[in-house]
Image (cartoon, rainbow, N blue to C red; front, side):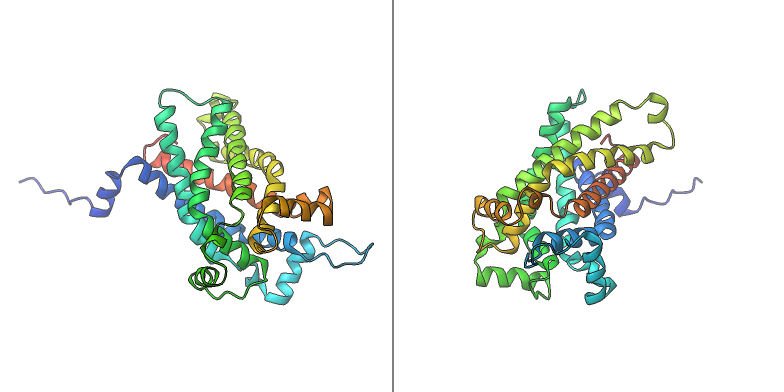
Length: 299
């Protein structure tokens, strides 16, 4: 008699039958979890730099990233660097999943038989980011407030309730324009540079065991360029989400930053943000592509 084979575990079987877009969502969520946990301190330092009150007298030394970093450790202990990680998780785990599943669906629908060119890659990345950005904006607002140090929220749920009661639900969508002006171009520019850099790789590298490392390097280059191009929008977004009553319109925040800090004010926090966004995006894409390849799907 032939031995009966053990039935495949139900969870593994259902995963194998899952829709490709759902698989892309799961791969994206996992990659977002890893990158968020590692690089949250850089996001916190960036937010603190952008929201510092500029009460220093003329000629006083500027406050930099290292100063803020050690000040947080001194006043809030080491774990203070991960303040806001809960809303970051609540935003990035579903948010990155939504981004990658939307990206995968759009790419399969419009570019099933060929690779997108540079212009199409920009639209593809920007479109996917707009969907994810709008869906997760309320959590983004709460995350920014947690990191600013100006609010004494205890939990994400408590923060959402407090904002709705005291400021109205509309406050959860403060900075929407600035967020989309920051995130859509970032993702579009990132996908363009990333895809074009990968296309330029020699065939022997594309098929080697070093491909994940090479992909990460391509992601770093793309991330730096995209971060610098969208830094002003990030500064405006932070001001509008931390103090929506002071800056109800995007133009109000732009005027305040320029009047108080000049053009350099639009690049405050550029170093920690570039580090975080670049490394986070490079890691997310590398992990995502490796997981998709293991599932037999073309990312």
